[in-house]
Image (cartoon, rainbow, N blue to C red):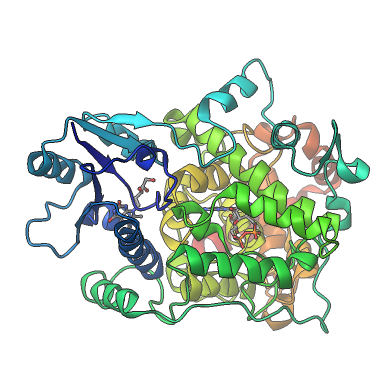
Length: 500
Ligand code: FAD
Ligand code: DLZ
Ligand code: SF4
């Protein structure tokens, strides 16, 4: 009786459910396969992160006495896909049982069903797809805030008996400040590539030269020990200011006070519970204020769990909706970053350089543009899935399809996150370096976000006007004279036509 235990590239956790009852004689199978490297052309740093972290994790398992069968991308016999590699491994080991932890993507689950494996629950999360479905049942609206409150009660995080500590569930009214000029965020902990990472970097440079993004400098942690160091640095140096500057953007600083741990969380080097516990402990010690700690825990206990629940509840139909009937192709500058709109150039530039951009850059700059310009959701989603080191479909899709593009018609967000240039000007220093002006509405100097915003409302009036949360902008639009509306639309058409 021996068991073949499969570990995928985003399952790099020693306590993983598929490894839990390992006994000598069992084999752990890990596979580097070209299909996973190319189903979208992942950012080069994402490839290095996943493959180097897999190699380090295999060594860690061996060190702890596990027998690991590791198939490398450059092994001559590698057949290139999960399914054919599992078949080859079954022929090699002739196991009596095959076990695998449920994957993070619908696409992989469909493959997995053909492996003859026992698929076990991924209990690294606070909620399961089944518990989320039970929460969602009979609810008209699936709002994150109510799910989050239940998760607070269930986890006991930041609770005083049945009540939230500090008397409120959410302290966002204290957050969302722009960054004052004299405030300099701390330098972030980055990690020098070791020989294992260097070897992977050489392989990625040779085999995937046409993939998006800069390969170097590569500073991501690829082991749990280093990921914990990055987490501890965030908790001690950035968490106290996380709440205040969560929505701020600054030219030349991609990270500000954000944790920059999503890639580690999503591949399993860190576990959500331990991160929330450490953040809560920082508040208990008096090292971080409640608005910061609550805001941070909400991202992980609330948003992250919520999007996963939504993904598994709504897939596969979710990905096919296109509520606003957006069909414009993704403009070429999403790949090059070359654009006169400084905010777009900066957000895409950060993305190319680091395989990272923080939430507000993703939502209110590149996402906002895609929404207002009516870009095709499938093309936008593919972009988000490949450009970020933390992108796996279970978390990328709801954020892009639902939150940024409103392509689900309001399943996730109660209204579209549409904004004019004034928002970007308020939250960043991008506009000072831009050839457009955020306070100019029409004409050659006008910020394109300004006329695109009103054009978006005009174009989608039939679909959005009845939304109670859109009442104010539509009342303003109703007061606009026909000539101004026509002028706005002329500007928008000219601009959108110029995208090619
Ligand atoms: P912090 O701001 O420090 O937040 C802490 C943690 O909270 C993050 O590490 C992350 O795990 C979690 N979190 C925060 N917001 C969200 C959210 N909306 N959904 C899920 N988890 C969240 N996140 C991904 O992990 N992978 C993606 O592919 C991804 N795609 C996105 C696409 C779009 C269009 C948008 C608007 C958001 C996307 N996000 C994605 C959510 C969010 O932008 C990132 O989690 C965050 O920027 C990661 O940086 P950080 O670790 O510094 O986060
Ligand atoms: C993202 C990725 C890449 C690039 N390569 C591999 C790989 O070679 N082997 C592997 O097991 N996993 C890889 N992954 C992660 C998988 O694509 C991931 O398991 C799925 O996205 C499902 O969540
Ligand atoms: Fe972006 Fe408009 Fe500001 Fe330029 S003026 S940086 S386009 S918001």
